[in-house]
Image (cartoon, rainbow, N blue to C red; front, side):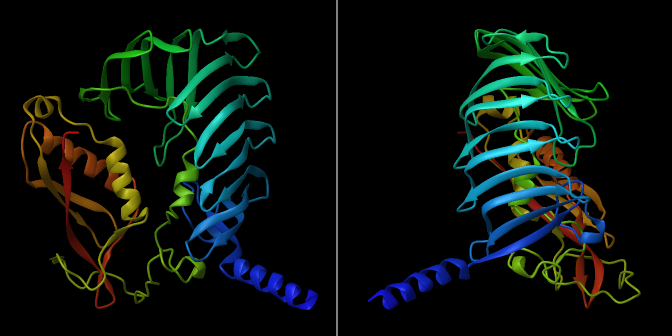
Length: 372
């Protein structure tokens, strides 16, 4: 009986391990998968090879071996304590995730090791800022009241973003702004006792994009690299040959001849191997969803529909000739063009391939405007 039980235990253990593999993944400065020789970071982890998701403890390091993050995944979701570290070894932030949602008290620190702030999370969209300190230890926010400031980076944006405003009894109050590190205004909002009053968004050049109908959520942003890593965004030229465990989500190996010039200057619509963004179409559309704003005139007039935006992926992966080929008006055409061009240019593109050589390809994508 003991022998049978022992074999059953071994069988269960084998079945559990059969779908998992210990892996090391290499990332560039944008946290996209790359090769070891061009990496800035690497992750040591266990991968669920059936569902292609992280399982168990993960550790992220700089290319020279400095630990920058430790966390834990269960069924591909962040669960348990996550600790982020500065390059000097000091803790940057730490707290608990439950099913991908930050929960409980998170602590954030300045690079010199001093406490920066304490934030109490119910979930990602529901939090209170309990306290905030400057880098020399002066308390600016006490019991949820006082001036607050945060600086962070977002995916493939070359500048950092600085958000500042005032808290009153744990609620946003007065004017809040977000500017890039070069001083360009990106967002301005006004609150009264926690309630959003008005706001306006601007593009990265400071050009107004339109009036906001609701507040931009979550001013305490989780590091963007986690989302990039979890969707296996990859740099140009990376394929399933580089990461055999990820063949399901990475493109086939491209084997261009030594002369990889286009076979002609013709712009193709259908090719043997279509052009694709390095961030994946899922990541591309997520960027669109995160940044699109319903034009006020269209919202007021109840206009819904699809806007079709066309552009060309050149043979070298660069992008050109963005234009709307079918629109619905009242600001939707301009907004669709803006958000598609912005999202497209945040990814490196793999060009289309015809007869083994890169070609120019025309791409058409719909943007759907639908009132909730």
